[in-house]
Structures are given as structure tokens and as C-alpha cells.
Length: 483
Ligand SMILES: Cc1cc2nc3c(=O)[nH]c(=O)nc-3n(C[C@H](O)[C@H](O)[C@H](O)COP(=O)(O)OP(=O)(O)OC[C@H]3O[C@@H](n4cnc5c(N)ncnc54)[C@H](O)[C@@H]3O)c2cc1C
Image (cartoon, rainbow, N blue to C red):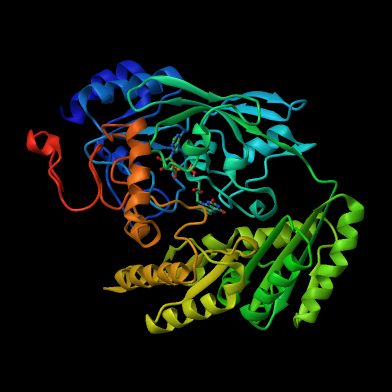
């Protein structure tokens, strides 16, 4: 059946204002934050309850129609890229905070609640630590699907460390509960499997999260260096000294220049690198550690160390850092953001390789990243209106990811695989590894209608054995074909 034929039934389920079928309006949803890919969805629905989500998915299941879940559409790997013959299920209208349980340090939410709203809902004594720079818009449902990180993950961990319960709609429309408010539910860790599954195992419709007390004190500094080499060494030395900063972030010269131009907070545009270090915790411990961090910066040749005197100054430092992606518009009309991970000790060497790739491809590559986690975000700047430049940028970004793999790292730290990086999966995982992923996926979604074509490098049929080509029984019966 064609997806257009489902529109009447979708309207019965979600109401007339909960379905977008008009071609012009559907274009709003043709990309996520990775604008290099565009696909117009067959139909878009905006459900407001779990029951509506379940009925939409069950309808798709009955009519063999694929679907893709979408939160706020800020993903950077094309995870929420629609399929043209399918339904895009947008969760952004499900944004109720259902319960704030400060005594037990839990919060229960619908998937469309933004990341920032969670910390606001539990303030002033608590907060929710994973904080992507997109936190004012990205949804907790999207954070769960991507296992999102952020500035504070070096100390506090990623989304997966905070989810204790999930209600999910399975790809056949059934609603199931995983976990609850307790920390470690017995049995297989299905929540662990779901977090980071990029919308391929079902749709999270209710989420229970752990929250933590706000630290007593926060001390923040920004130190400037002649280059990324000494700044990288400073990161290693701070960690080796036993400090566990709440955040430890780095920007190179190109990123500093763009951020200063965008925010005018007073960053020195001639600095080779800037390192932001934030310590948080009990006042006495912070005080004791902080002077040690300043000493380490100075020992590594910091040209200036500025300590935030108050909350206003601290906010200015973070304003500059959080504006980094948007500030790239100052360098070029378009950019391609990469998200690779490397062992922290190899920062200098990999950044040098990235710089040489930038020279080779004649493109500016700015670096702004979670230095503590070794999670690089090289931003390959280009002008899409110059013929061939987008292609060059994509190639350069691919080689940057390869450099991360060569250094013993990973193809993604927090942005997921999506459509963009699935071709790199074979560089990181063996055929056996991929077969195990596929079996897990098939146990949730045997027909593979949830976010098809994402994450796995080459789509396999469920039950297909990896290795040399063998005809699958469904192929033999003429029901499915390899593409
Ligand atoms: C300027 C900027 C800065 C960013 N900074 C960071 C950062 O610091 N750290 C970081 O980790 N990321 C960052 N991101 C990436 C992005 O914001 C995160 O990946 C975020 O979690 C995506 O949330 P979303 O609601 O926009 O999800 P979407 O983009 O809508 O979807 C992302 C994926 O989640 C799936 N999905 C969405 N909702 C659900 C659901 N309820 N159930 C199941 N699957 C679902 C989709 O199918 C898709 O695969 C940044 C993005 C931008 C644009």
C-alpha cells in the first residue's frame, strides 16, 4: 500500500491538525541537523499520546509501511532523515513533565521535553547532567536514541547512565515497560540496548531519569596557549594529577576567532588554543584542586589564565563555547561537523593530521571539542555554492574519521551513526560484531520498518547469515530482494 492511502486513517488517529500531508509543509521535515541529506517524508504525524503513537505504528505494521521517529530534528548524523515511502512520527507535541520526585531523585517525562527543561524542572537543588550544546531545543527522546553527551559527561557520564525506566512502542505497535524508578532492574539490560539504538528498536514514549544534587561550588577558568599541543598536554596532566573536572573543553585558533566574532565576549583571537576547565563539588575540595589546575596550565606555558570571578563571567565563557557550531557561519556558508573519539594522549598528533588534511583539501577546519573525553568535533568549513566544494568537504571529513580510527578511536562519541557514518561501521566492527547487532535489531523489529537504512552499513535481512552470499529464503520466494 502507498503511504498516501494511509492519510485518512492517520487523521482518525491523530486528528486533522496532527497530520501533515501537504507537500510544501512536509518539506519542513526533510532534514535533521545534518543538512547535507534531504528526503521528503511520505506523511508526517504529530501524536500527543502513547496510544496515538501505538496506533500509528500498528497501522504501519499492518500495511508494511516503514517509519522514522523524530524529536526536535537537531541530530547531526541524519538519524531522523525521513523515508520517502514512509511515515515520520514527530514526538515534539508529547512534552509533559509527568512527575518530579525530588526525594527519590527521579523525573518522569514524555519524549518531546527538551533537555534544558529537565534541569529547570528540578532546580534549584538538582540538575540533569548530560547537556548537549543543543540543549535548549533537543528532546530527551532524541537524547536517548543517540545516547547524547555534552560538556559535563567527562565527570558525570552520558544519557545511558541516567535512564532507569522506559515505556516503548515496539515496531508492531505493542507498548512495553522496561525498568522503572529502581537503579538496576533484574534481567537483561534492555534499557542499555535501547539507549543509543537511534530509533531502530521502537519509540520511547515515557522516560524515567535519575537526577543528581547540584554541586555546592563551581569554579571555572579559561586558559590560552600558543597551540593545541601544550593545551592537550595540559588536559593529560590535569587528569593524571587526579582531578576530575566537571567539564574540560578545548577550542583551536579558528574556533576562537569565529566564537569571538559571534559573541564578542573578549576571547583573544590570536591565541592558538583555549582550554576551559570547570571544577565542581564540595567547596573545600574545589578550592584545593583549583590552584593545582592553574599551576598545571602555567607549567605548560599558558599565555593567560582567566578565572571567572562570578556567575556572570562563567556564563560568558560558556556562551562563547556553546555558540561554536553556529559561529562557523562566520568562517564559511556551510560546515560539515565530524564526531570522532581518540585516546586523549594522542590529541596533539591527531589534531596535526586534521590540520594537514585541511591544508591538503584547501579548507578551513575548526576544532572545538570535549577534550576530557577525547571527543573531537572538527568542523570542516566550505561554500556549497562553489562547484565541488561540498564533495571535497565530505571527503576531508571522512579522512578525519579514518584518522580517529587509525589512532585507536571511534567513529562517534555522541552524535550517532545515522545515515552519515554507517559506511564507516566496517572499519570499526567485524562481520561477527555486525551480525550480533543485526540479531538484536531483528529481535525487536524482524521486518526492519523502524528507521530503515540507518546505522547498519549494508542492510541485511533478518535471519541472513553473514559471510559469502547465500540466497535468503525470502529472496528465493520472491518476497524480498537485495538492493
Ligand atoms: C548546535 C548543535 C549542538 C549539538 N551539540 C551536541 C552535544 O554537545 N552533544 C551531543 O550529544 N549532541 C549534540 N548535538 C546533536 C543533537 O542535538 C543530539 O543528537 C540530540 O540528542 C538529538 O535530539 P533531537 O530531539 O533533535 O533528535 P532528532 O534529531 O529528532 O532524532 C535523533 C534520533 O533519535 C531518534 N528518535 C527521536 N525521538 C525518539 C524517540 N522518542 N524514541 C526513539 N527514537 C527517537 C530519531 O529516529 C533519530 O534517529 C548538537 C546538535 C546541534 C545542532
